[in-house]
Image (tube, rainbow, N blue to C red; front, side):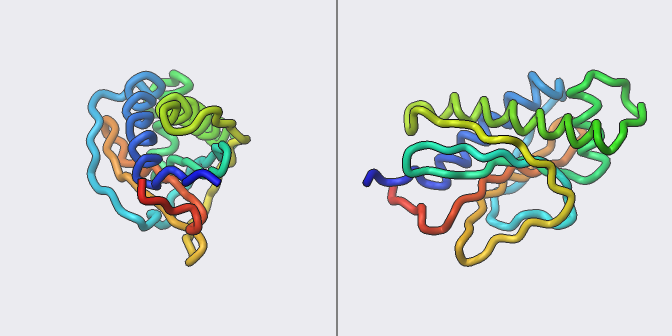
Length: 162
């Protein structure tokens, strides 16, 4: 059985993808990493999508405040700032953002894993918690005026020295 890729490698691939989606998908000006940690922010809605490869399974996601999610959705849908957006449209847009992010991550992981399959995105409006069986790598960022967190979740047994 081959060794799993380290969580930090996944986090690096997600951070590179976050830079791309901030610029190309959301068309935000400026991208700054604020903090790297293992704690998922509380009370932030967002979307997650599974990525699966041989001996690997992770969830990657993006979360923000309600206002941040609305701004990301409006930006992705190219709606004017301040235009109202329904909860369903916001959830759909954030699920699409997770899908786009996963595409970037898949590209960034080619040297480590190939092929990587994408699952279906899921919008979450609640707090996710890790357990002794789950690990998180969280990168808190500022994209334009929006603060968000990009998250990698993986089962704890997939740890490696790589």
